Amino acid sequence: MAEIVSIVGRRVWDSRARPTVEVDVALADGARGRAIAPAGASMGSGEAADLRDGGSAFGGMDVRKALANVAGPIASTLKGMDAADQAAIDATLGRVDGTKQFAQLGGNAVVATSLAILRASAASAGKPLYAYLAGDAPVRIPVPEIQILGGGAHAGRRVDIQDFLVVCPSASSFVEALDRTAEVYRAAGALLRSNGKLHGVADEGGYWPAFSSNEEALDLLLRAIEAAGYVPGEDVHIALDVAASDFGKNGRYKLGLEGRELDRDGMAEMLVGWLDRYPILSIEDPFGEDDPEGFRAFAKAVGTRVQIVGDDLLVTDGERIRAAARDGLANCALVKPNQIGTVTGTKAAIEAARATGMSSIVSARSGETEDTAIVDLAVGWDAGQFKVGSIARGERTAKWNEMLRVEEALGAAAPYAGWGAFPVKKKGS
Ligand code: 2PG
Ligand code: MG
Image (cartoon, rainbow, N blue to C red; front, top):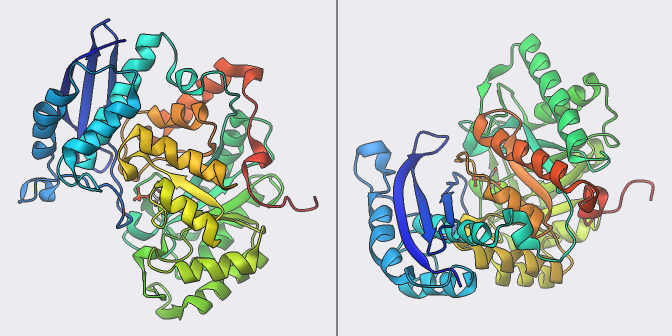
């Protein structure tokens, strides 16, 4: 037993210049752990709620109240507990809070505490966090989904679709997947610059394009893959995060860029048209969180042609994941610790996905920091896929670079997950 002797919070900054919560934990045996809460911009309504101060300072985003909860009720109830009993710690956080979405303590205070205690436990056991989480279970290095173009809530709604990403299941390693992605990123930048369409860089490091349609982004991505010397659909595939809750309500979708409104059938038709024309392997949140009917009809129509990922729809909630699998809404769960608030809840989400035959993607948020705990969660729990935004900006490369180190450290003990990570039929197989 390693008893928790201190829990200290402090205010640090995220990649959007917003305050966030960092927590330091110390155990009686001298082990320490630290974690920082990330923050989303396109959020599901069922997510754990961050506690923000409101008022005028920092646009109302300050976290003094959340920090007061770390120093007060959180520290006083958790001190003296066994850090290795993560389930008991997370259950205590739930009990002290008393609400479903951590509205009292703040999801930001809770997730940083839960992860900091996890890190301290791994340190106490003398193991890297991924090894502590894996125990004796076999693990793989996850396939990265990496953003090339940003849009939606992360780029002033310049394009409707939030993320245009690339994914390389046919690479032989994580190293090779990043190599291919970096070449595509360079090629995309060069093409945008030469067309005069480069507006800047979006929240997650992808290019912020000045396009007049969503298809223009898909065409650019295809050309960038080719310009980098790769075969689209073989060496490099496309993944999309439509983040449709941001522009859809009650089954109607407003494409601001093109000045059109689509019903759910029209939306499905547009997406199936894209599947026919582009090598798209994965589509996240193709419909709004309030439109399970859209998800169901789309999933039925496309079968195993594409991975359908639930983010806002599932909010890392094991129960929602099981229900979605039962109802045939999606075949992949996005997993973000701060959506459910605790380490235990996050693990339950991955287990629910596995138990129901769904794939899973451990994901960062659009507001991030140098914290790399999600790298260890993705490997240690063998998620199979990993999404962190683009291959530019330090809060993103902190994660990619850490994964490179983990792949090197594990060597042959952890193969690259490759095609096996996807619930789809590989073309030609
Ligand atoms: C998403 C995430 C990360 P946010 O929608 O998947 O890209 O964005 O953190 O803003 O929810
Ligand atoms: Mg998403």
